[in-house]
Length: 338
Image (cartoon, rainbow, N blue to C red; front, side, top):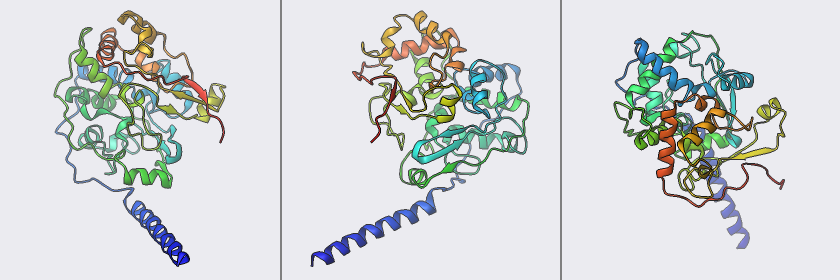
């Protein structure tokens, strides 16, 4: 009798595993082709393009990822004009690797092959031109205002086209399961973007929140998250998200390849990192200094080029948050082997 129960239980478990495998295999690359595109269009107006350049090379930090090599990443961080032709392979832990896309207007390998509608749908809804869902958390632009979205795409359209055929992302079965079974890779259904972004002002908490949530993406890294699904598991902006070693990057900077990093708590709790910056001027000064830890995932290069007004707005917004007591521990650490 006991043997039959064990065999029956094992059979149910096996059936469940096979069912999950089949479901994931059939659904991980689901297409969302029937989703409409925002009614937006790029512009050739020089003022709009100039604003787009500020966003792409500054707060929206597109230049941090959409390059082709780690050396390009370092050079771009320093402000050198690197073509945004994509190709860097970003490790996503057990999920696999994501290759950054070619953002130049090349007509065969870049955004030149896509319509404005396809690009704006990607930014607003997290749906790639091929219909698959992206990882919106990495590009949190669903509530970026219409005028800022238009400026970004207009600037990208104005760049010199560069041919660079980027290979598709490499998903493990775990990555495919996350795509199928969690909300991580799902389109943004009901974005609530404004037509016009809050104006640049040194006293605008509203603009600071807009930037921190939908442009600079402070909220993504400075919120505790599940290491596999990236879903939030703690208070916003309270820090603690862990970043596994990126061996190629660590080796490039001749650093220990076992070093992990943690995002600090940036709520106004006395134990958080924000407490170090008593004034907006202190905050701005730190950002102007740029990168201190070579392997930090923080986009110090682009953020160092943000305006005083935008940095002040973010400082004001962060200081308006409810303080959260969360001691995240050392920013750089090594995990003990099991």
